Length: 595
Ligand code: AGP
Image 1 (cartoon, rainbow, N blue to C red):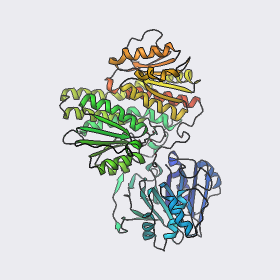
Image 2: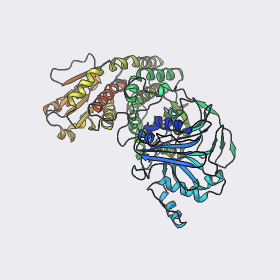
Image 3: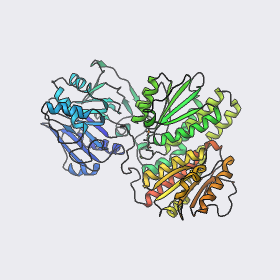
Image 4: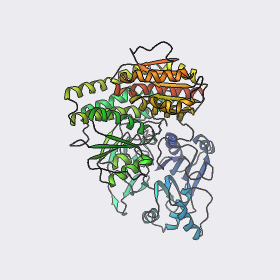
């Protein structure tokens, strides 16, 4: 939920730190700070508010070639100057991404030792606990301190008696490192370092890094020197920039044809068989948008492969004592591969001995490294907090997996599978057609913008699409929206439909069209204003909808891949009309690496 950076080299570190933090602001942006060794002492400058305020505070510069930086998403302690990072003592300073869950007992222990505290953060406790353990040997002191920590952390530390060196480690939070021509660097995520290199080290949990100006040394959890191989990110620096769009979100919406095509092509070539024999049952667990992709996958896997699928919100799954059965297979879906609840759900399944598959977008992420088998999606960097292209590539991958399972289960012949795969390969061009409707969608957003409420209804795969559509709208426009299974309306929700209430009816499934139509008429009869999304060539009776948007025809199972780009644009324009910060919506962060 926070972003950390570190640099040790021959260059002035401040521009490098601030530039890296800028690329990590999507991870959290309610305060920021740096600590830099200026040749005589380590100077800390930090502030509540966006990075631009920290830049203002540092407008006269800060000399030094070794430093660490942080951009925060508050977990313990409200956003404030005193709660912002770095935190430290008179012997060390550090920045932290994650949560030290047992910080209050550690704080009690430290108070007994005479330590006092000025912030409400778990990070200050971590810094003072490390201080209490520090005996002049960084590696053993760090190992000793973190052996008492429970929770998740990625830490970057400077000890004042060796101020040109940074120590770093991770447990449950992301961290990457790189030795470049400019010097040695660490960061929470790839975009922060992409302008310098595409070759990174991916430290394992518990490993400690010692970063000096021209070297990075690794120590395993036992404190012994370890060797690390680099991996190469298939992202370029400009790919992580806005590419001329006003917002990352719009850029990422328009990247969908390209990245869906890349993902489908990869899955067509690399046969995506999950295992030698198909599972008897598939458990899917994820959060937010990824969970909505799982709900769509359930429909596809059950319909095509005839395998029962259970989809769980990860934060529920990990605490509800799930019952595992012989023949189960567990799939965790995560764009970032770092979502704490999803990682915990994966670990729970692994502990039960269930074969696990991670469907992730970020190479080398924690989930990618811990799952027994990893299926990558190829959305490239998704910077906007609202997930768009990642959802569509997750669908593409999951539909390809569903087809492979159906063939394996003898439910689809090779020819039928080839037909489905050719339809899947045709989806990028159809997404382009949908994106060409942006003007109409913007008009629709304008017509419904007066209301602070919006309902999304659908049946089957359209209900799966409605759930993701609703999340998109609420998270960036702050309009209260909810998804309701169209057939469920009359069991309660319809009491909320009054004159002019906006209802987005997603009705793309031919077999369910008549039923969906009657639900739409129920809404109309109560005065609801209807935006109808249906397939082209479907006759829509006069007066059924106030606004009608049509998607190109495609297999009913694949329709969310076309409905969602429309709904993403609807959410985007609604947010713009309301003056919201589209890429960094309030209270949210891109990767929820804490519980
Ligand atoms: C969706 O727009 C949100 N950004 C959020 O719900 C996100 O999908 C969720 O936090 C899961 O993230 P992940 O895919 O990186 O695990």
